[in-house]
Length: 308
Image (cartoon, rainbow, N blue to C red; front, side):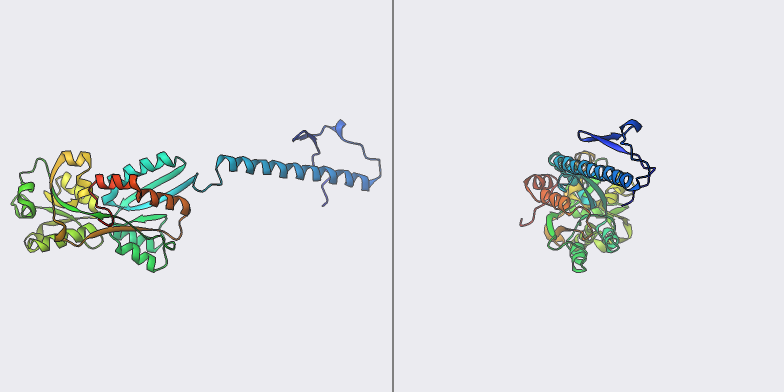
C-alpha cells in the first residue's frame, strides 16, 4: 500500500497514538526514496494495528455492558386488541421492572383492523388479538414466526351503563337494552371487532336484536364503544368485562355480566410476526404474559385463562 507523503505521522505512547512532531521524525537520507517509503509503511502499519486494538477493546466493553445481548437491550412493538388496554398497561409496567432495557410500545385497536394492516406487514413485532381466528389466518399465510402462536385469555362481555343512568342494568340484565331510556346502544363493530360479534350473538340469543338493531351505534373497537357511553353519545352498551373492571370505569358505572353460554367462547390469541426486529425480546414478553404474574393481572381484569 502506498501512503501519500502528505499523510500525518504518529508515534505510539503506551496504548495511545499521538501526532509526531517534526523533531520526532527520523530524517530520511536525501535521495533515498526506498527508505522513505519503508518508513512511511512502518508508520501506517503501526497506525492500523493500534486502530484494530482500539476497536477490539470497544467491542469487549460493549459486550460487558450487554449491548450485544438481545434480551438486555431491545424493543417490542405490540399491536393489541382494545379490551387489553388496562390489563396490558399494567403487565408492561411489571415486565419493565424485570427487563428495564427492553422498550415495549403498545398500540391498541380493533383486532380486525390490525389483521388487515399486518397482511401488509405493518411495523409490529407481536400481535394480541381478541380472538384466535385472525392470528391463525396470519400464521397460515406464513406471516408468523414458526411455532409462535399462543392463546393467552378468554374474554367476557357485560352490559354497561353510567352510574347516573336511570336504567337498572343489574336488575334488568339483557332486557335493559329494551328500556325506553336506552335510545342509543353502543357495541363494537361486528365486521372487524370480535367483541362486536360476541355482542350481536348475545343479543340474538336473548331475542332482543331485532327490537334494538335500529338503535345500535358502532364503535371502531371496544374501547371506543365504552367512550361512546361515557360521553353520552350512547345511553348503554355491551363492552368487555376487562374494561368495566378498570378502577376509574368501575367507579363511573354499573354493569351486568352476560352469561357465557349466550355467545361463542372468546378465546384470545396472538403470534410473533415474521418480520419482528427483536424476536428474543418479543418471546420474553409473550412468556411474561403467560406466566403467573401476567395471569394474575389478567384475572384481575376479569379474563379467564386458557384451560379454564
